[in-house]
Structures are given as C-alpha cells and as structure tokens.
Image (tube, rainbow, N blue to C red; front, side):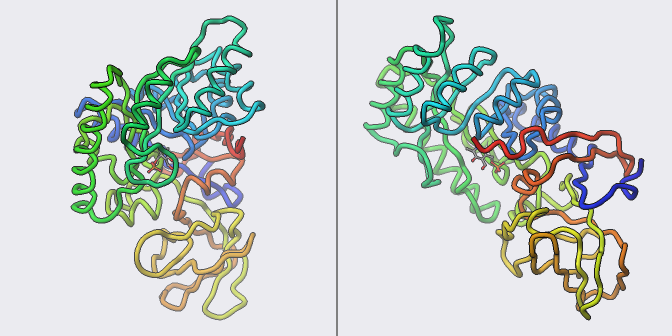
Length: 368
Ligand SMILES: Cc1ncc(COP(=O)(O)O)c(C=O)c1O
C-alpha cells in the first residue's frame, strides 16, 4: 500500500531516515568510546527499540514503569528506568519486572533508594536479584537530581551499602544545554570539568562509578566533549522534530516522522482546516525563535499552522501561492515528536512511500 492510500491522520515513519539517524548516533558514540542507551519515550515501540539495540545500543532507557513492562514483555532485557519510583503499587511491579530483566533505576534521595531496597527484600522472594542504582545529580537542569557536593557523596555511599541495590554510578541529563553549537560546546566544556570533579570526589570516597549516564539529542554529536559520560540516553534523535531542527543540530532532512493530514474545509478565506488538532499533535509549542506554529508543513513552508482545537488544525495560507482543495493531503513535522507519538495507536513505516510496517505504539499512554 502507498502512504497516499492511508486514512488520516496517520503517523508515517520514513524507515530509511530513521535507520540513518540510528546508525549515525551509534557510529558517533562508538567512535568516541561511549555507549548508546536510547530513551524510548520518543517512539514507545518495541520493534524500534530492538532496531536500536541491534544497531549496537547497550540497552534502552524508559521514563515510566509501564514502558519498562511493555519493553520487557517484548523481549528487551537491558533497561534503565530514569525516573524515581515512589509508592507501594509501583515498587511491587518494579521488583516483579526486575526478575525478568537487567534493570537499573535512577533516583536522587535516600527515601526512594530505601523504598526500592526494602521492596526487593519484600517482593523479591529470595531470588537474590539486585536492581542497579544510579544516583541522579543535577548539573544544570534544575529538575530532579541531588546537587554535587558532600551530601551527594554521602547518598552514593548509603546506596552502595543498601541490600538489594547495586550502586553503578551517576545519571544526569543535559537537557539544559541549549543555544547555538558554540554555546552548547562551551556549556559542555563546563560540564566536562564539573563531572570530572564530581567523579574525583566519589573516587576519593572509595566509590566506583562504572556508569555515568547523560546526553540529549541537541548535544548528541557533541557528546565527546564530555569525557566522563559513559552512555548517552538521547531519544528524540531517532525521529527528530521541529524543535531539534531549531537547535541547528539536525536539518529537516533528518526528520523521520511526519503526520499525514487531509484538508477538510476551505470555507474561511485565507485559511484551510486540516483533520488534526491538539489530539493529533499535542499543544507543545515550538521552542525555537520566530513565529510560534504547531508544526512544519512539508509540501508548502509558506503555510502557517497557527492554531488548533482538539480535532481541527487552522492553517493560514495568506503567504502561500498555491491553492488548496478539500481532500488534499499534507504532511506535517510536529514540534515535539515524543508527545505526538503518545497520541497515536499505530504508526506506518514506509520506504519511498510504500508501507512496509504497521506498528502499534505499544507503550503509548503508559503513564504509571
Ligand atoms: C532523563 C532523560 N534522559 C534522556 C532524555 C532524552 O533527551 P532528548 O529528548 O533530548 O533526546 C530525556 C528527555 O526528556 C530525559 O528526560
């Protein structure tokens, strides 16, 4: 089937572009002695996670326990859960899923560490299976992560001594590293020095840190600037989107995901309505400079996708020289591909427009 025959809205994945993204990231990290552990929150599809592992990733990263369960159910075994696990309902599931996978969890407090450690004792049924532990540190994001310093060293020490947990090192997230390539490089230089100091403190305290997990998509091809990082958790790179293009780190040609939509109304002069709104794209605004729109219309960059209701996309055509009729199809690159994916039940993988895969988005909506 050709993509033009698919009903809309339809998420289209250009498999050649996606494979090129996977390959290029893997090659860059491999060349600089770093592992890839891609974040699957971007695609939420086990088949794509498997392709990333087959390309050389040491494992995958998930944000939610529900994503971990889906991925383990599909046979993936090396998983980092980059999110603090809190509450009995989750702890029970965590220990259960850890029986089937090599699981590592990141957190930034003794409360969470103790909760997991005790749950391993309570629900692990004497399996002796430990859960890997990364202490999340805040090197600039200001979200989760303990501040570097004596308290952080003390937390790592306590974690290393807790039963049921195996202290493996540190996690940080370079999502705060923004700006031009030069600005990002300068920030990464600071990050390099900071992480070296932190690792020095831990070594002095007698703690080994075989894993220092970091990275992001905009900094992916600059990841070699931060020597201490051992593994890169970039996620968005697999598809890219308007936001990653706006960082200058990639081009529109690197965007592997598009959403096909149909023109359903031309009644209002100067405007067309497409059959996708905030329930198709989400309302994530573009992060780059300039006019805020809701996505990039591939066929006609003069079209401006300026407003959304749930099921209606308002596209201004006053700057465009082309004319549009009801039934015309357009393809839109979303601002933020990760949240858009979470809205869809299935995606179509194609090569040169021929659909060769239909994949359920198996981990969509797994928010717990
Ligand atoms: C903890 C963590 N690691 C990795 C990533 C992946 O970063 P990116 O979206 O830049 O690929 C994210 C993204 O939100 C994240 O929150």
